[in-house]
Amino acid sequence: MDHFRYRDGVLCAEDVALSDIAATVGTPAYVYSTATLERHYKLFDEALGDLPHTICYAMKAASNQAILTTLARLGAGMDVVSGGEYARAKAAGVPGERIVFSGVGKTEEEIRAALTGGVKQFNVESEPELAVLSRVAAELGVTAPIALRVNPDVDARTHAKISTGKSENKFGIPISKARAVYAEAAALLGIEVVGVDVHIGSQLTELEPFEAAFTRVAELTEALRADGHDIRRLDLGGGLGIPYQNTNEAPPLPFDYGALIRRTVGHLGCEIEIEPGRLIAGNAGILLARVIYVKEGEGRRFLILDAAMNDLIRPAMYDAWHDIVPVKEPAAGAGRVTYDVVGPVCESGDTFAKARDLPELAAGDLVAFRSAGAYGAVMSSEYNTRPLVPEVLVKNDHHAVIRARPSFEEMIARDTIPAWL
Ligand code: LLP
Image 1: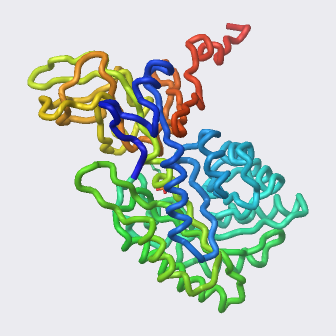
Image 2: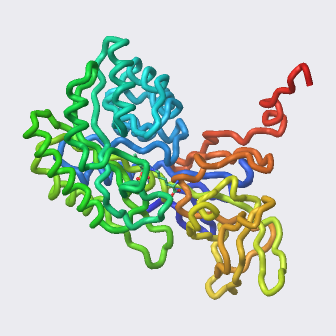
Image 3: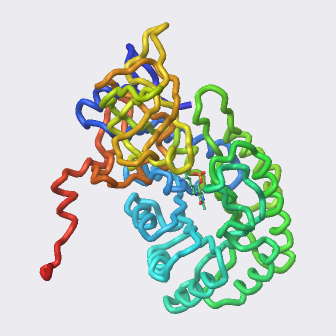
């Protein structure tokens, strides 16, 4: 459920017409609904109910300071994967004790920054990382709380590029080696073992892979406790999918995911950490764009938008589907046309949709890409020297630009020409 609806013939974000945002901010632009962000966070919170838990929003999905602040005020923790994300989380007022640090390639500088600024736990992904963490913690005279991210060799049955829990993926420590690495970790200076971490992939549309992974984590937890480790936290990662097509998709609900967590690991008495990203931000955002031209090709009609692959790369990168809807509500019985929906970038890959059946559109019309709030703006670039797409946050009848579109002058001024040139 989200808060983008037609009202008086115009698609609105909460109480703000997207046409008004296009008029003041221009297009393309991302628009987020505060109510949807908050609702999705609360769904997870309710799904975990009385289990002791922390929801560490995977901020890689959408990391604007206004979004982080919205979630932090509800009590959200953050899952960060870089020094930059750590700095953003802290700047949004998230205390270190609510930040978990994930990622296969944490640098010494990143580890040092998190140990100095405060961190709930490092999700450690390798033995070499463990060694660096131990050395840096010892140098600083502090203790690093850790969970090992285990790779349970479970097929998440999602797109290959976002599947992370199979043995061929770079992530985590093979679960078969976990007990040995935990023993090693416990003996290291500056390291305190606190939990187990797992994340098997993103956009999962079934619960079974989670069930397989969490069951393995529960077995491992019991084995580790028998080995003498005080396992008191389980970080179960993120990955719950969202519906990208209004019509026929119904991924599991947070409530059922919560019930699964209770069933598989609830008996262990651990604090549960989860790291949802997409489900919190995905349907809370749209990408607003304008039709530049309708072009008749050979046996096809192109809808050329002012948004391009640099603004929303998911279709080009994962063949992802995003519903595209006109901002002006089509009249009942209005004609429909099949379009190839494309952007202005000089690559054939700059295609959002092929042979998409849409209400008839004309140059100047506005369209919205649904479900673009997660992995949209954060993956944008300035390719073709197209200004980084701006972001707008709506709350009730207010809207504000939360990241401004840079001017050409600002973009050019970031480059420097060496004096010796
Ligand atoms: N935790 C870890 C360790 C992760 O690597 C990820 C996502 C998450 C949590 C959040 O997963 P979510 O709840 O959002 O599924 N750019 C891709 C998605 C990449 C996901 C990477 N890791 C896309 O646009 O589909």
